[in-house]
Length: 538
Image (cartoon, rainbow, N blue to C red; front, side, top):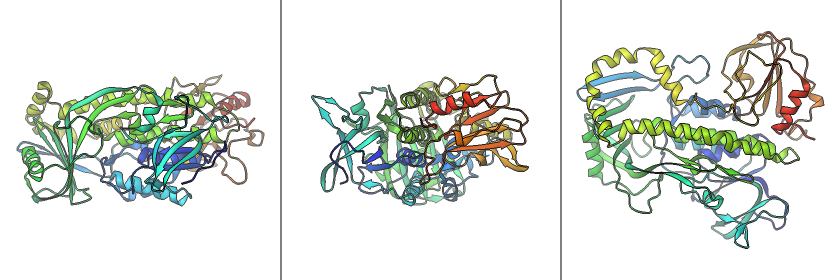
C-alpha cells in the first residue's frame, strides 16, 4: 500500500469513500489543482443503486467537470409518471419543465450505479485509480489524542488486502456513508433519529399491464410505492415503505438483509397496482433515519455526503445533496493545496455554507416523507382521501407552471450562501447580478458578438470574472493566479459580456455561485476577494 515515512504528503487530499460524494470531491479537488487519492473499503465498485434521480443544480455543478454528457446518455430526461389513486390513474409529464434559467429543466432519472460509473471513469481518465478493498481505520494518535504531524499534515491508518499501511495528506475528506468512521474520529454529534418505517428495495419481473415506459406511483393509506423500469437485476425497481423491522445495530441507509419474496409480492399487491410478482431478482430492507452532524469538520478533516447528513428517500435529495457538498468542498481543498499559504477562512466556509443548507434540505425531505409514508393518523388520512381529488388532478398537472415549481423546488432554490465569509459586496453595488452567495442563473449573453449562455462560459473549472461591457480591463498578468504554472491549467478566467452594459464585474465561484460583485471593476477590491478565496499567490 502506498505511504511514505516522514512529513512529505503522499497527496494533497485523501478521500475516504467512493460513492457519488467521494468521487465528486476527488474530481473537483483534482480539477482545481490538488493531488488526490481515493480509498473505499468495498472490494469492488459494483453495488445495487439506492438513488435514482439527479436534479438540475447537481448537473449544473458537475458540468465543468466534463461528466454531464455521460450522465445524460444514461438517463431518462423526459420521464412520465402514472399516479395510481385507487381506480383512478393520472398522467404527469415531468420532463422539460418551463425553467428558462437552467440547461437542465427536467427531472433526470439515472441509477446511482451509472452516476458512480461516469464519475469513476472520469477519475480514471485523469490518472486517479480508486483503491478498492482499503479501509480507513483512523488517524495517527499520540497520547490518546489525534495529532497532526509536525508539518501540519495528517496520517491516515489504512487496512488493505496486503496488511496495514498509512497515507499522509494535507486534508482528509470523509465521504464514507452514514456509519462514517471519519465522523467518529471528528467527535461530531450525530443528531436526529430513526424513522418508524423502512424502505424495501427490490428488482422484479412483473406480470400485468404496467407500461415500462412510465414511472408508476401507487398511493395507499400505508404509504407510497414506486416502480421504475430501471432495475439492475430485473426489469423493474421497486421502492416501497413499511413499518420498520430493523434490529439493534442496524446500518441505517445501507442495504440490509433480503426481504422474503412473499413479502415483496404482498407489498406490490397492497399498493393496488394491477401487477403481480413473477420473479424477485434481488431485494433488501433499508433502515431509514433523519440525522445531521453537528459539524462538517474543520481543517484538515471534513465530512461530506451521507457522512454529514442522512435523509429519507423523499424527493431524491440524498445523492444530490452529497454531490453539492462535494462541489463546494472540492474546489476549496484544491485552492488550499496550491495557494502556497494557509487558507483557514476559506476552508471554514465549507461548514458555514453547507451545514445550514443541509438543515434546510433535511427539513424538506422530512416534510415530504411525512406525507408519503408516515404512519401518523393525519398522514394516513390525507393519503386515504387523495383519490377523491383524482378527477381534478389532470387539469392541475397540465399547467406547466405547477410542474416547473415542483422541479425547481427539488433543485434546492432555497439554498444560498449570502452570509458566507467569502460572499462580498463591492462598492459601488452592482445591480445587474444576483447578490453574492446566490446561484448564477443560466441567462443569455453575448461575448464579442457571439451569443452564449452564462453557464457555457463557466463550464470549465476555476473562477470566472464576468465583466460588463464598459468595465475597465483586468490585468491578469498582474494577478498571480492559483495553478497558473505551465504544467497546470489556469483557474482564473475573464469574460467581457458585450450584451451587458455597465462598468461592473461579477466573480463566479467554481461551484456556480456568485462570490463577488461590484459596480466598478476596481482592481483593489477584486484582488482582495481573489486573495480571500485563494486565487492569488503572495
